[in-house]
Structure formats: structure tokens, C-alpha cells
Amino acid sequence: MDKQRSKNFTPLEEEILLNCVSEYTKVIDCKETNALKADAKVKAWLSVTELYNSQSSVTKRSLNQLKSKYKNLKAASRKRLADEKLEIFLTGGGSKKISATEADALLVANGAVVRPLLNSWDSDAPYEAVTSGEEIFTLFLTCK
Image 1 (cartoon, rainbow, N blue to C red):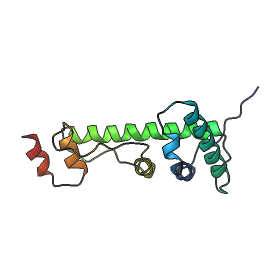
Image 2: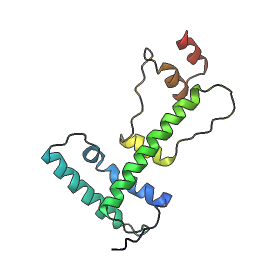
Image 3: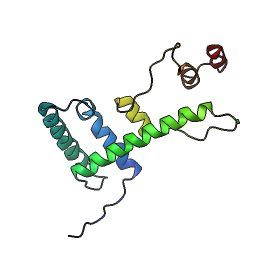
Image 4: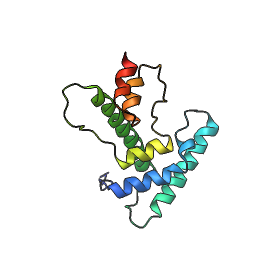
């Protein structure tokens, strides 16, 4: 039983996958585990697979390959966003090393990866001030 390794996903294929999943994000990322939700997830993934494979510029993929890639994209995006948050508070100056990708933006827009809510009384207030594009001095005002 030889398994053939399929080609790696190209950035275009990743974007197409995220666009296909965006229609079904609420169903696919639902945390409930009852039989009704599980059946809805299977149907959603079948629809995503059919929609993805109907595109002319992609390599045909199985349902399990698409699910695995989506899971890996979400995990990588969460890691990049966490690293970006950590990078903001490092000392030593220099330029910012970590930047979000288009896939991260799509995942955040679809709600698959969550950004924290703005709350000036939370311990993340300095992070929110820096990442929301406000003036840098608000970081120091909230820390005092």
C-alpha cells in the first residue's frame, strides 16, 4: 500500500481554500459536538471540498487534506499573532520582524482566529494601544 505524497499547497491554493471555507466558517468552527452539529460539519466540509476542487487552478484534494490544511493554517496564524504580540513588548529596539500574512487577515475576518477585544482596564491594554494604530504615547499613559 504505497501512499503518494501530494504536492504542497501553493499560496493561491491556500487563499482559495480560505475563501471556500469562509462561507461555512460558523458551521466548521462551531465548538458544539452533538450529532446534529457533527452532521452539519460533515456536509459543510463536503461542500467545501466540492467547491475547492471545482476551481481550475488547484490540485484536486481530498476532504481530509483540506481539513488538515485548514487546521494547520489556523494554528500557524494563531502562532504568528502571538509572536507579534510578544515582539511588541521585547526590549532592544530594532525593526519589527514578524508580519501577518493575507491568510492571517482572512482567518481573522472570518472569525476563525480571534483578536482580543479592546478594553483599557485589561492587562492587554498596552498591546491594544500599539496594535490599533493609536499614538505610541497612549501606551505609556495606560501603564502608569
